[in-house]
Image 1 (spheres, one colour):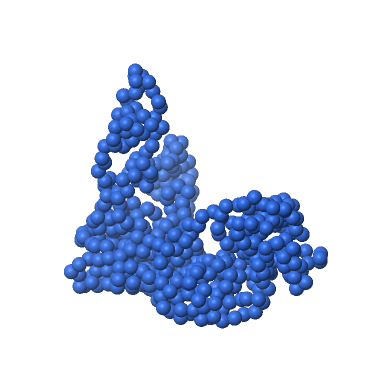
Image 2: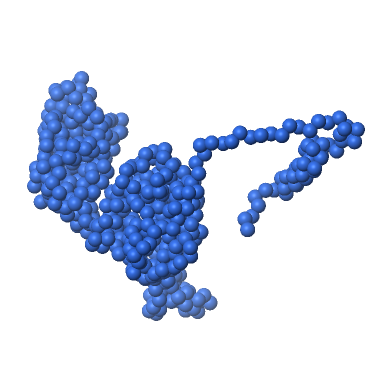
Length: 523
């Protein structure tokens, strides 16, 4: 039973109003019952005319749609055990640690702290002493949603729903329970496929072939808070959302009510086709606030096809470090619009390097399709199979060029290792020299380029984020190893009539381009 949120005074008012209305129905009008007129007054009153409300038309009615698709939507119950023995007091948290006080042997609490430490696997005071008592893996249960995509029992859900599962139970709308096995998962897109064996005639739904538009109706069906078969409706609020730093997702934002347990559940269009799979919500309190995110059907179709065929997902690999092109960078390279992906460095022996892609190139299109930003390029390349030949449109030295590249296979483990680069040591600087752009630079005796020793806080360089310790590698795609070369490159930008210099900088081993505004009127 839900708790009432009305205060006692409000309840009394509502009760009195209800009584007046009920009495009014018996006496002709609410006014008569509320004021209790005399019989003489009542004889003079004329009953009010009955109100006839006009029929409301064109109101969305999803009943037939829901009745048709619900048999293919399932609840998924997961049982398992925490594989990480370091997890303890809260699921998802690290092992409990306590800084035990160094107490004398005769202290009344010494025995207590030693026993407390053994309970949580820490031994005696300071974490030393008696060995930790072995702990059994902690069991857990979780619930999510899913939907059947084939008559022979393939079901789509989220990776995070079945992650770590030892047992997966599928519950249909009519209450039927069947045990399923995990066929494959993809952490990058948060998708998973499970399978019911021995099935040949299950009701199933289709993934949409056409992309849903912003403003279209969607109906979400799922298992929020364990309430299987729950239906909510809303519209597509936005497309192409980037959440949690995903390099591969291209999420739909919907305003249908989505809560805990809806994960893995489908969003249907008005034709009963799945346009998205719910994966996350934005919420300051853990509940629905009208902002939910779904994996679009195009991504679901591509990933689930590979999972069903091989149990894994392979992605195309170009092999470049990239960043967005902002207005400063666009101005510095002569682009009219701030769009595309700027190559910071091609990876050694990568498909891109072998094809001739260089640091400082701006990739503006792939196979003739415009690239809006770095994330768009990542999604585009990841969506292609290894071995695919693609044509890159690049902007280099003020003009457009075409480069053909055969994509390799993305090695996720190698990419993760490459991302962990050691911070270079910053040697003692020789003689520093000020520059015309507010940077004080010195030659980098232990590497390439120049080191930033000081930044004028009132300069454009400070506004663009240059900091002490940064390495300046190139200006306007020209390597610089001395302050004189730096100033010469800046002068060349001014002579070309541009107001922004493209500076290639490095910090903590990570290379990035920065558009640095300069005053072209000064020389």
